[in-house]
Length: 508
Image (cartoon, rainbow, N blue to C red):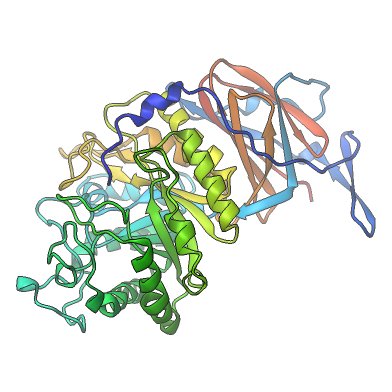
């Protein structure tokens, strides 16, 4: 992972947000029995909503609170109160599908979970509805920098002396066993987890430099590498772990010297997908979409990186690609907003996922970490058509030292002691994940949400059962706000410097 992390959290000093440039279309009149009239070109439909049973629940987090119930600060519907601060919500305007929030289960993450006396408790907390309820998990295909030194860097077809193995006779997932064990238990808790998987390097014998570090894939092995990736997908599927999205490469413009990686160009990516991986994936019968880019927004000069857009200009290649992955390690919040707008404007049919970001051990302030993330990776990303978000490590030791190369200050969603102590600690990234994953179901739709104050950010979703969930970040002092939905209103007090989740169910 690109080591340009430490500057990022200073961005919390930037105090502006980017408003969602959509417009509301609802009309109607307000009463306790809320009558809504929706006009189409052909007919006028009138429906009545009984709000007497539409209880509003809310909880908040900051440095003093962890998912603390604040439902008592919510007024009754249409009680006559109205605040200057307003959040308008329209669930009749829906946008992209939400697939969940979560993190990557790296080898290091699996290791720190597995060695803990609280192993089962940790797994249950991460994946159950009573815990974080993680619904989106990223996996590494082979090793990243987050492995233990005892295991070392690996792929699934490493050979002695880098002897070629084009028929993949030595292919094995054996080194991933502790990851697979945790995944099996996670799926027993939540069988609907969505998986993204990304390779860091092809086996060394397939590469120009015969090394897991740096280099590129030899053209002679394009077919064999496509077979390698499809073999991984097939074996995982046989184990009950269906990979919904296969990324072509983690960070294709960055090949580190101390952990696995390799580079791709726009042209080699197009050729590999179009002529090799895409057709083989279709032949396999696996229902897996391809993801491209999986890297940052801007280059060192601040210019938006056009890699995914240019790859998708090739119609044959684009026919196999369903998603674009984006990382957070370059530029600022405005670059991220511009980049997500750019991707949607050029390829509105292609899903976008925020696939990697991390807090670091030097920054323990919950509020500033939350602000940094919600402005770039969460609230504003979902307002710009992102379908899901995965932080980097799901779990790490408290000092981020369980790794081999790469980042030595990264944190996980949770920290797990290595000294035999029980328990775990929720980190800043875990707070943010929970505010989305606890109540927003995978498959929900993003809805229209508009705030009239730049110190408050908000986004919202509606699921198939009619549950509406808003996630709001209050940047600064305690504030009261009016939530306006279908011409009905309630007020809620937003605690200072906090992330708030607000839910209610649409009346039947």
